Image 1 (cartoon, rainbow, N blue to C red):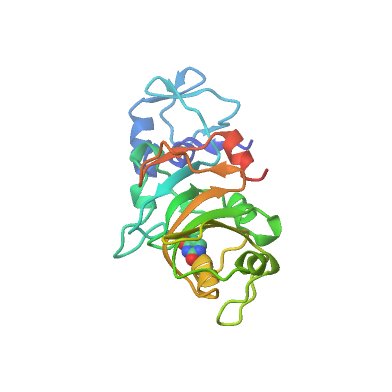
Image 2: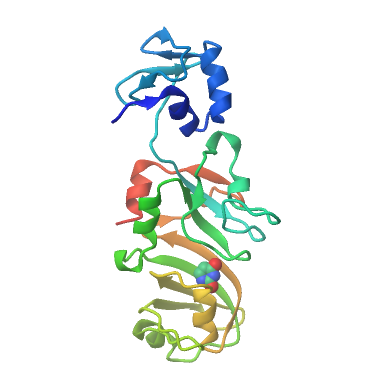
Length: 238
Ligand code: URA
């Protein structure tokens, strides 16, 4: 791994702004391979060098991957002039510059959302060609036609003529409140809502339960998030 300036390296790990970490370094809180280092310009290899901050070893991570149980009423964005965003909900110890939601859920949609600072990963997870299926549970108003499952499997045509890729529909409860699960691998604007509208149903509640092989952790309350392990990140692509 290439060497990085100590201030840049520490700021990338969520230890504060460049100015904050420069203060830490100049104040003697940072050591490299056992020696206090007061130069913010000193370069270090975060994988080969032992870096400590206030005596605690730095567990360097190039990228961060968080799972959030998105609540209703917040927007899937990094920042917004008026609205509360999912990044605003991330607690300070898990904050990093460059964190963004990998894929959007509507303001009123809840459930599994991944936040990361790894753009390549987000692309792999979201690109329809990569075949990473996302599972949603929907509550519906109206009743589904008897051939809805085969219509989803063949590829729905939305009311505006847009063609969707084949998707899997499973009706969980055919009687009111009608509940269904749908697996899609693309993310057109309001896609699930529009797919059901094309079948004569209005979505009254939508929750994402799974992305690839990764399920929403039932221990996470609405608005809570936690870091993903390397195995969990890999499971998205299984
Ligand atoms: N489809 C929708 O209609 N809304 C979402 O938030 C996600 C998928």
